[in-house]
Length: 193
Image (cartoon, rainbow, N blue to C red; front, side, top):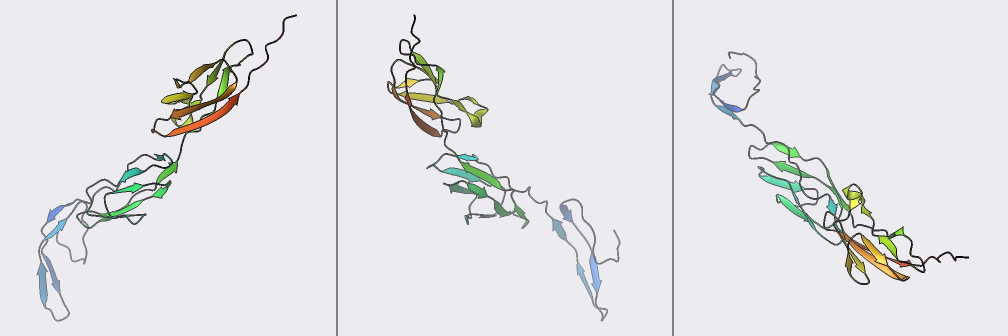
């Protein structure tokens, strides 16, 4: 459009041809005639697992299409490998030179902490049933895997016949493991008179 303003608004990316004529105080004129407006990229969204098993690593990815990356850790690649919980973010520059910063991505260190409880008590004259607990990260559903010791029994529940130390190792939905050991004592059966 014909305008005498020193600026104009562009609302849609694309290639535009402008005949911009400027005149200085000496009545000297200059002409510029072409301009390309690039559409910016969407801001980066970090992907990865927000639950990091203790003593493990996790890959975080800023996605694409970006030309430059600067992570809060100092990393400058599209991905970083982390080994600790924390708050991570990334600043990027796309191919058009537009800068963006991601939202914070929070990673927590987590290993499951199973709790052994009685489903039925161990009495002196009968067996009891122990329960290896539920996974709070999975809506208090069963863990993915349970391995009991002694006797290497697999499953959420175990029949016990004698007092002693019992341990269970569980694996959660993220592949993290946790173990608990507890002493299980027998309850005296009531005497019949």
